[in-house]
Length: 117
Image 1 (spheres, rainbow, N blue to C red):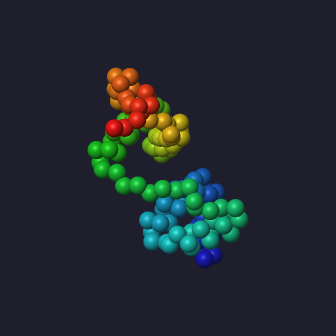
Image 2: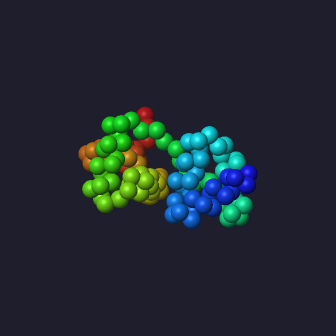
Image 3: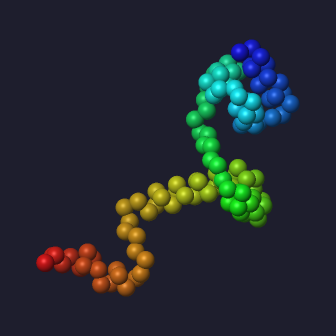
């Protein structure tokens, strides 16, 4: 455990972000609970809760990287932005009827209050 804590401390001193350190440790086979213990011993408030692991096809990854460059963001920032916007959009559309055609709203029975036959 001391080796892991020392590794994390040294990596931080060299300027690596916590997420990069975690990713590297996971790639080398360390289990998540050991990593969490090492980080929490250095920072008692640390917990890995806000991380998501997704696997993308090469085509989708290239598309996201292109979009990120266009928006002057990193790939991670672009994905976070997409997820954040998706959540905001979901909150604003909850409870609203999704209607594709304005004519449907004009002639909808639900809007006129007619009783079904």
